Length: 164
Image 1: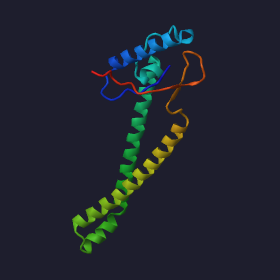
Image 2 (image 1 turned 180 degrees about the vertical axis):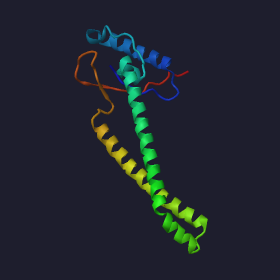
Image 3 (image 1 turned 90 degrees about the vertical axis):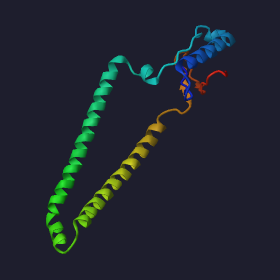
Image 4 (image 1 turned 90 degrees about the horizontal axis):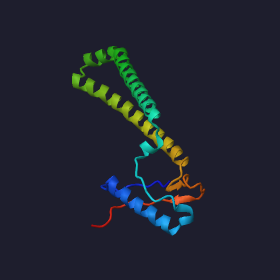
């Protein structure tokens, strides 16, 4: 099995034709090990590594993740409303001292934006850290030859369309 990245704008049919040509060349050049591998097949990774029964489970998990995110958003919204309710006296005092409605709204929006930016920065840091950890668990630019049983890494290359 060889994993490769299709160049943007290249159709799967042309990539499939090129992979088949490469497989035939290898079968001719190395008949002892590759004689039965004369055809190539280009498929999206999701179809290769995700069995049909697992797709429903993955969609269910995605639905649960969306639900948890919605619950978190509603929770943050309720905390903001609670904070505004607690500060009602403070806002009344500021209004009685001459603060305009625009000034009070700007103050509340500024505080909300600061909280949102801090949350976004924390989320970006967590994403970067988790992406780094996930990247460390995969091999980059290599794929093992599971179909032939060899343990050496196969080189991957970009598949491009034949010149016209």
